[in-house]
Each structure stands twice: as structure tokens, then as C-alpha cells.
Image 1 (cartoon, helix red, strand yellow):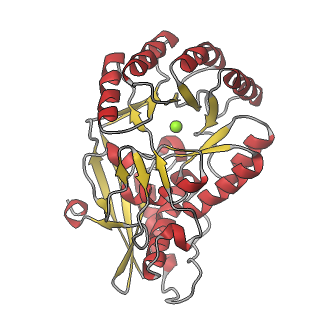
Image 2 (cartoon, rainbow, N blue to C red):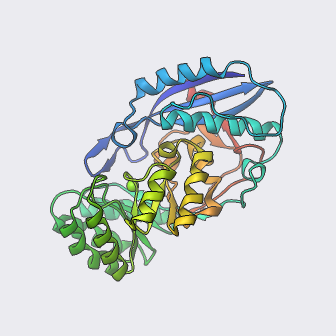
Image 3 (cartoon, helix red, strand yellow):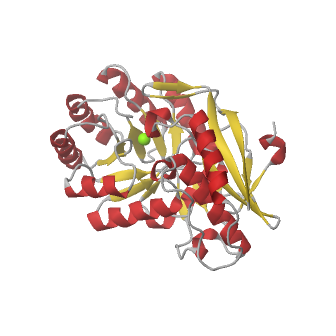
Length: 355
Ligand SMILES: [Mg+2]
């Protein structure tokens, strides 16, 4: 097996991506290919200092270490191949998990979800509205609705509470009654959140992601969860929830109604399924989300869509270029549906990858 990768800087469809405390103009990502007997498996590693503490240079160095460790591997066998090295950072584990599973199921000539015994994935996804001025956000929301998305995720969490109230009202006004989800990316405190919750409820917000900092006190998180419940809003943790052990603690201490699962944080699909299993045991809801990533990352996350409550998998749609493309389109009218094609149902676009 040969492991290769492309280090990419992809521009955003809208020119920029803004969340609380972070603005970027291009997205750094690694598309990883595992090749054997002329068949290719694709995976993706997205560096993120903010969320997983790993930058692009470190991802590249760790991919090099994984390549040496992979070495010659068994060419037959029914079991999905194990990951090399236990101590790789989570985005690198995610990329290897994706590439190895895509290659394995492609060689079996089965879609990955079926090879793993998962229900066929079909789920509406949100499209993300970047943080900005209320009128800019309303314009972006209208664009997403015109493109067919039936639910929107609104980035808030910057400036005074009044600024966020104006933003969510502006989006709600043009959203046509579809459910909204809000992500404050750690930008609020308990007082601000309790003040904003009734406004969110008025604006058809069904989910609130990570309003408080990731190291918020358990007492504050419990109070917020109860306050959100009174307003009919689900409180989810994202930056504070990475793998299954976090989910166990969140469930046992009743810190939230659910978690945002991202395979880049969890370390791949198999680790992501452990998160879903633990959430089920704890009675927590799961939203499968993503970083901004290409179809290689999105296709892997999509595999477990049949086991979660909500999906926020618009990452590839936010990018202006497609270095990896679905063999058949996954996204239609805001609904993601995995194909019957073998593996992940994606292929590399060499003309974009080599740019
Ligand atoms: Mg989030």
C-alpha cells in the first residue's frame, strides 16, 4: 500500500469564513490517498490549532510518520484494517481511517456504510451563515435558502448581546420559517446566554452549540441546559466534546442535551461510532458536524448519518474548489444522501489536487 497526500489551500465560495474569534480567507487541508492494486482510498486531515491543537506542519510530519508505520499490509482478510500508531493527532487518524476504510470497502465493491452494517445515510444538512453584519448575514441566508437548504446554522458570539440579537432576527426574517441552529463558538457567558435564549426560541432556533467556553464550570453548564430546556432549545457541546470519554462525562454530569460529533476531533469514523454508542448509552443527542473540508471528509462523516439526530455537513459546499468529487452527487435540495457506489463514492479530481 502506498500513502500519499496533497497539502491544499482552498478559497471559500463566499471569499471568507468568519466565526467568533476567527476569520480565514482560505482553508488548509490535506487530502490523503491510500493506493493498492490500482484502487484508491481517500481520506482527509484538517489542521486546527483552535479546536484540536494541531497545525498544518505537524499534520504533515505526522502523516510522514504514519506512512513509515503502515508498511506492507495484509492484502486479504474480511476485517476492516486497523490504524497504525495509537498516538497520532486526531485529524491524522481521521484521514487514515477514511483512506483505509474507503480502500477496504472499494476492494469489497460495497458502499462503506453497508460494509459496516450502517443504515443508508440520508439526512438534511444545515448551511452555515458566517458572522457578519445583520444585513450581510441575511443576504447569505437567502442565498442558502435559494440553493435549497431547509435548515440554517447561524454563527453568533461576537460583541454585545444586542449585536447578536440583531443578527439572529435578521436571519430569521428571511429564513422562511425553517429551523435555525446557532453556534456561538464559546463567545457568550451564562448571563448573556440566559438573556438570549428567549430571543432564540422566538426565532425558531432548535439547537444552540457551545455558547460557553470549553472550560466552563459544570454548574454553569447544568444551569444553562435547564434554561435552554425551558425554551425548547437543545444545548449541545462542540469544542468541549471530542471523543467518547468526553461524552460519558457530559452525560453523567448532565452538562448538555447532546454533542457535536466531528470526525476530525474524534479521530475518524470508527472513533465517531464509539461516540454515537456512548451518546446512546447516556441518552444524549448527536449532531454530526464537520470542519470546512472537502468531499473526502464529508463523505466519511455522512456514513453515520443514519445514527444521529441532526447533520451539519456543509463543509464542501462552502469551498470554491472541489479537489475531491462525489461520483454521483450527494447533495440535493439541502439533503445529503450516500450513494450505492463502492467505498465512499468519491474520486480525486487530479487537475484540482495538483494545482
Ligand atoms: Mg460548533
